[in-house]
Image (cartoon, rainbow, N blue to C red):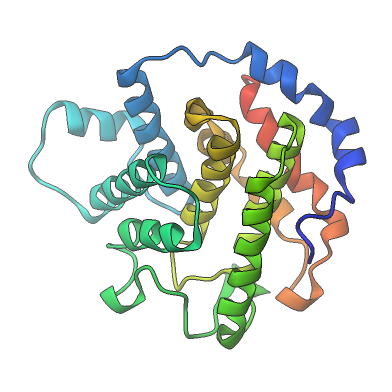
Length: 254
């Protein structure tokens, strides 16, 4: 798929794209270091929750507030993801840095030999009734990711409108999940990458947007709209708009 193609932008603009600048203008980006740190922790908690982590934001913040020494795997999982966000906030979005971010966030998810490395085995996504999606074969992952980052480089170097930034950020998120390049941690990495791209194009303050929280609160729709084909070769991106229009809604309070 050519990620640079703007094939779906006209319809995207009709559905929500032309409202994005107004939504951004109304969002509270007030500068506050404590607020920034809190929102980073919040993003990591909600992103972990999407993957089944049971520690909610209130419990995690009270854990931090009371400096509780006893740790669990779920707490460590969130703390590792926070560290990955902090790494991304101080580094450019490159293939090498994404691999480093995965190495950080996946410490409790995969063995040391699989951290920060593309998978070498087949993977599928399974539901209650069996396999839902079969990702690209492992021998083609590196090729797909090299192409993926060629697109990111081009997008990073081009001037984009705010509408286009959000459009491409969500499309990168979707494509990344479909490639499923890692043994585990793909969803967390995809949501991190999406926000990383937005912040690189529009500024550091965009790390504050509550995209992970919105995806968590609309988790069923999030997963339903990611599913646009039963395997990597039968993906129908003509159905991608239902996923792409979710992201800008994070500016709108439920």
